[in-house]
Amino acid sequence: MRKGIKKSVLVISILLSLYIILLLVNFFAIKNIDPLFAGITASVVFLPMFFIFGLERQKRRFTPEVIFNIIFYTIIYVLVTYIIGIFTGFNYSIYSMKFGNIIKNVLPHLFAILTCELLRAEVTRKCEHSIVPYALMTIALVIIDCTFYETTFNLSTGDGQIKFICNILLPSVSKNLFLMYISSIGGYYCTVLYRMITELKMYLIPIIPDFGLYFDSILGTLMPVIFGFINYLSLKEYQKKEIDGKTYRKSKLYTYASVIVTVLIIVVVVSLTSCRFTYGAIAIGSGSMTGVFSKGDVVVFKQLGKYEPQDKDIIVFVKDGKKIVHRIIEVVEVNEDERVYYTKGDANPTPDGYPVFKKDIMGVYKMHVKYIGLPSVTLNELITRKK
Image (cartoon, rainbow, N blue to C red; front, side, top):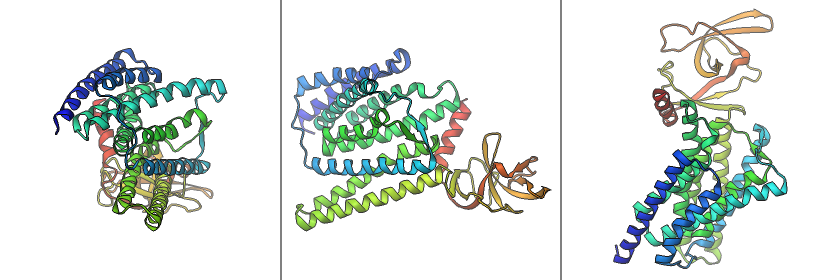
C-alpha cells in the first residue's frame, strides 16, 4: 500500500471511529432520531476529510452503466411490489400527504442521504478497498438506520428485539454493503439515486404494500444482495470488450434478462412468504415432525380452497397465534356442514389434545426445502433464550 494511501486509511479510520462513538452515544443515550441530526454529524466527519485530502473527481469508469442499472432495477422493483400489493393489500403511510408536510419530511431525509453518501464516496475513493475504513463506514451508517427506526419496535421485549434485528438491522447491513460496492465502482451519484428512489417514496406515496413483517425482512435483506450480484454480472459483460454497437446491445439484452429473473424471484418469494396466494411457506421451528421434515426446513403448503382435509394429511394451522405443522390423526363429523380435526406430530409421543377447526387451517403440506429456514429459527431461539 502506498505511503499516501496508508496515511489516508489511518486518518479516515480514526475519524470514523470517533464518528461511531458519537452515533452510539446518540443511539443509547441522546436518542435523536431526526434525519437532520444524521446529516449534520456526517458533515462534521466529512469536512476534516475534505480539508485534509480534498475532493477528487467524481466520475468513474462505470458510473453511466451503474446509474442505468439502478434506475432500471429499482423502478421495476418498486412497480412490481405495488402490483403485487393489489393482491396482498396495502397499509396507509403514517406520513401526511399535504404538500407542506411532504417538504418538511423529505428535505431533512434528503439532506441526510446527500451528506452520508458524500462521506461514503470519500471513504471508498480515498481508501482503495481497505477493509478497516470500509467496515467502519458500514457500521456507522447501519447505526444511523437503527437509530432512525429505533422506536418502530419495543426493544425491551424479546419479540421486539427479534423484529428489530430482522426488519431493521439485517436489511440495513445488506443495503449498506451493497452501497459500499456501488460507491466504489459508480460513485456518489449512484448511491444517492438508489436511496432517493427506495427511501423517499414513503413520504410521497400514500399506500405501502402489506406483505407482513416476515416477508418485509426477507425482501429488505435479499434484494440489495440480488441487485449487487446482477450489477456485478452486468458490468462483467461491459468489461469484456469496448462497448460498441452489437456488444452494447448484448449487454442491454443481458440487463433486461437479469431484470426479468429478478422480478420472477420477487414474485415467487412474495407468493410463498406472504401466505396470501395459493401456496405459502413456513420455517419449521421444532422437531415434532422429524422423519418427514426437520427443524430449520421450510415447508411449502397449498391453501385449502374447496379441498376437505383427510385423515393422515399434514396440515398447517394456527393455534393461539402460533403456526403449527402436524398430521391429522382423526376427523370428527360434528354435523353435515362441519368437521373438526385432531392432530399429532409424527415424532411426538402423544396427540395434540385439542380440536382444530377448518377456519384455523392455512393449508395442506406439499413439499419442503431443507435447511433454508435455519437462520430465522436460530435467531428466534437466541432472542427467546435471552428473554
